[in-house]
Image 1 (tube, rainbow, N blue to C red):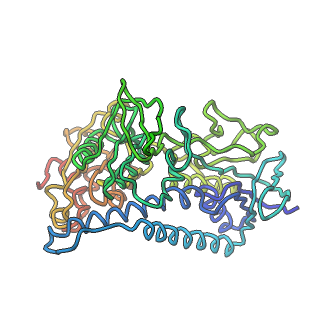
Image 2: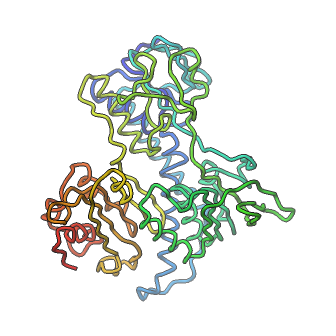
Image 3: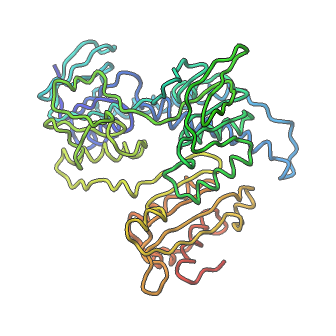
Length: 465
């Protein structure tokens, strides 16, 4: 039986970040993974979704080539080629991750890890065989799996979750997507750009409920303009497979829609099955998430939890941050709690959405006196050149004594490549920068990103445009 400074159960972003970060700091680390290294993000989440979204972007760009004086035939997508390219990228990244773990002398076990108390971890059901190891510390990072709804049993061909959807062999003629959060909207955008007839059904009054309403309104208008049938404020009840193929989805007050496939995007639930938690003090909340304190400690001595298995934002980069925070705590280094109100959010729809910090409504609810400014990409030269002028940048700031902008509280973007532009806004929010401080910096021109600088400059009371 091997003994380690840290045993990590789960090889997704939180788990492998902790393993790499801890090994880099000199800890003897073991990593237990029962499926594939990289977790949901790498295998059936972030990476494959964004790769297929890029396929849609290329298809869309070719379809608009005539605007630039370039004549092409009508584009046709061979989704088999797209899927093979996606898998090649995944395989390369998995290989790279395995190489990194090996280079840092992380001991990787294949199998299902379960906690036996006292730092003991049992491993079973994989190629590593049935073994028991131990650690001075244990990190549970077993991630999450898609939720479903009653009346929609997943069969992988007619009704599917993100796990199955990201490997479909061909673009369907029609699809109903249940759930208008980040994942559902990305799938709707992807399918629509590739010529699929899409219906998007969302229980909440608007799409991407966590984003600023000004941003989600732009997204909804864009979706509707592209022919996506957006139904918000509706609940689905069940579906009925049709004799000729496809199925009929019932929703709202007696409404229905027929589609070839149904994609369930109604959130994700934590994975704690097989962990042996009955025999230890690790506690779960009423939704199944592992309960932790600000240092990500569970109620079992020297057992931590991070990533999707705890009730924090289910984002890969949050998992990275939590994994590294656990290592700092183990090492006795300063590890301030993560400020989840200021983390970066990126949604890879067309147009993209990206934000960090408080929305206008959240800032008011928190008691701030605020000023807000918005600049649209329609006036941005580089956006015009690229041919993507849909969207805006919105900055929320505390009102200063002169009635202008003080500390920057939130940055919200919707439009072209905003997921790549959020960086300076994220830093401004987290460094608690003021409008004057950010406005004093020079923005490169012509860039799409200078719209953020223009918006901040306007909040000084002396905007250019």
